[in-house]
Length: 328
Image 1 (tube, rainbow, N blue to C red):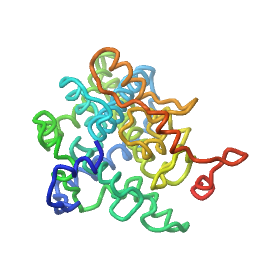
Image 2: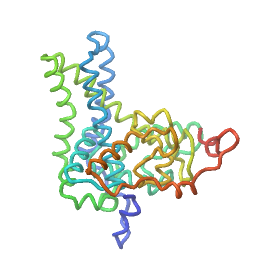
Image 3: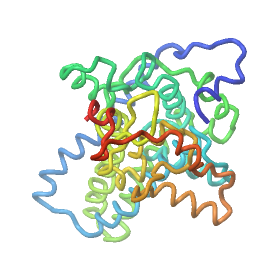
Image 4: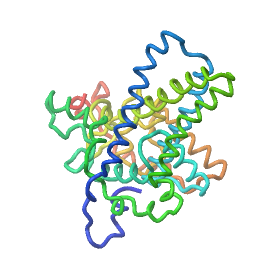
C-alpha cells in the first residue's frame, strides 16, 4: 500500500504533519539511536579484554535474520506497501519482530515511509539525501540527514493520513501503543541475555550476549536500514526509470536482505520482490515465497516482467546509464 492509496479514502486533504513529536518520544528516539552506538564503542575494549565467543556469534546469527525479516518482509513489504496478504498470527509476529529492531512502532514506521514515497527526493520527503542540494557540502549534510538526522525532527507524520488502514487494525494499533512497544524493545535485549545465560550457564555469557547479540545486532540492523535511505539514493546503478534518485547498491544486498535493490522498489513499490534481474539476491523475496508455499501469505504481488520491461533504462556500450554517471 503506497501513500497515494492511503490518501484515497479521504475526501478532504489532510496535512502531512500532525503537530510535533512529544518530548518523551523524541528522548526515546535519541536513546534508540545512541544506545547501540555507545554499546558498540563499549564493545571494543570489551572484545580486547574478554573476546567474543562462538555462543555470541550463534545468537547474533540467529536473531539478526529474524529481526531483519520483521523489518523487510513485515514493516516494509507487507504493512507499508501491501505486497502480500498474511494470516493474522503472522502479521502480529512480523510487527513484534520488526519492533525488536528498534526502528519505531509499526504505525510510525509505515507513516514515515509512505510519506517518503509520496515525495521521494522532493520537498516533503522526510529523509532525502538531496534535501540540502547537490554540492559536496550539501550532499554531506544530506547523507547525514537521510541516514539518521531526520529521526530527530520535531515534525510528526500524520498517521491518520498515511496509515489509516493500520489505525483500524486493533492488533497493530495495540502493538504500536507506547507501553506495549516499550516491552517489545526491552525484549530485544532480554532475549539474547537469556539465551546467553542458558547456553553458558553463566552471567558472563549473558553479558557478552547482551553486547554482541543485543547492542551490536541492533546497531547493525539500524544502520543497514539507514543506509538504504542515504546511500541508495545517491550512489549505485539505475536499471529502471523512476521519478527520484533511488539506486541499486549490490554490496548491501545480502545484509539488507534485498532492500538495496532500491531502484526497482521505487519503480514498482508494491512489488514483493526487489531484486528482479539476474544475479540480484533478494532474501526477503525468498522468505515471502516460502511463506506463500506454506499457505501463510497469499495474493503476493510478484514482478510483472512485461510491465517492468517498459521501464528499463537504456544503457550505453559499457552498461552505464546517464543517471548512473550523475549519481555516483
